[in-house]
Image (cartoon, rainbow, N blue to C red; front, side, top):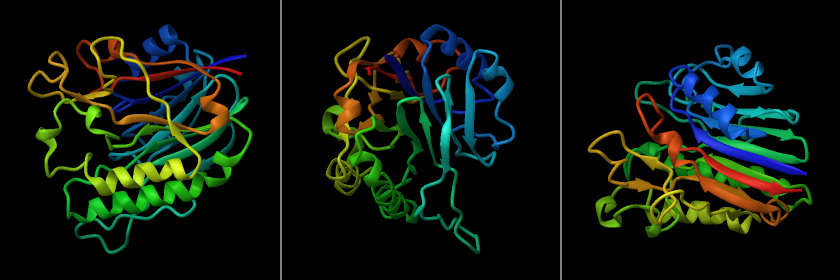
Length: 267
């Protein structure tokens, strides 16, 4: 059985709906993990996606976050939010908010989580510690599934570049988030939970970047970062036959600033 699984920070599913539908038809993934929906759970375009043969489990509030799993091979055992997920106390708020940043589902023979890790904003900001706490909660959540025999992966926008090779110029990020040692250590802790980084191949250039800023011609200059990642257990990783960054989906007007990452499995 061949299964194609993908992840894509869509940067507003409403604004990118035509791009999403076009890509679903052309790439034909069996499962797609989406992040940064920027819509509420009820406002997700379920009907448009269903016309292409997909069912969807979404988790969003209509603000800056939101995640979903889109599948044409089944959608069961849906879990919205990490069981021990921390909340974030925004400026002026009385209580921490547990944001819609994670959703898990079983799709046919595979169990997946779609995650949108907090950005962290800047080192020393409360959002930075929130990011580290969130990654720790993610590790705790995946322990049981990672150790199982069923193929399992956590896909999404991690907002962390695992190594210096995963940014166009590490000197440009000195003192900034996404490359600091505490962030990378929190990411590397997933390996101690039994997950490994499935590194895709680039369709162009030497490095499989997945994100390019809209500004300063970052995309045509390939000034990118690899922050959209697939962390998989052994059963999943051993079944991988190919993985690539679909850079073509980043081209043109009205695109997300992220490209989809595709993983093909032979199960």
